[in-house]
Amino acid sequence: MMPAYIREKTVHWGDCDAMGIVFYPNYFRWIDSTFHAMCAELGFSQKSLAEYGVAGTPLADVGCRFRNPVSYNETLRIEARVTRLGGSSLTMGYTFLAGDKVTAEGHEARVFVAKGENGMKSTAIPEEIRALLSRYAEPDDGPL
Image (tube, rainbow, N blue to C red; front, side, top):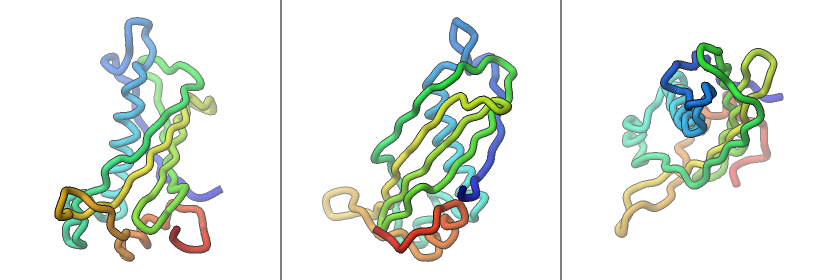
């Protein structure tokens, strides 16, 4: 299995619903914040991508499958991996664990974009950024 970026998150009272379990939209917030934390660890941010002519990495797709409930004060281990590194986009896979129990599995697809004449247009992932992201990616035969 490919290496993962790992982050831990303690579930706070405000993360839970009336039943005392994590309110599902929080998983999407944690997916997004984990991606940005991984990028920061690798040495770049959405703002610094401007140095390469990239305006950002908006979402093209996101989803999550919920396996087991998680409650207040439990610690979640979030494992993030680049499951596909294309020419101008990437797909991330996320596994959420409480101890050995998988609580959720998520994914997101992001597109590298530049400012175009009529808004955004996809642009190639800069080679330096591609090399950084490859740290958490499956080996492949090249960009798609």
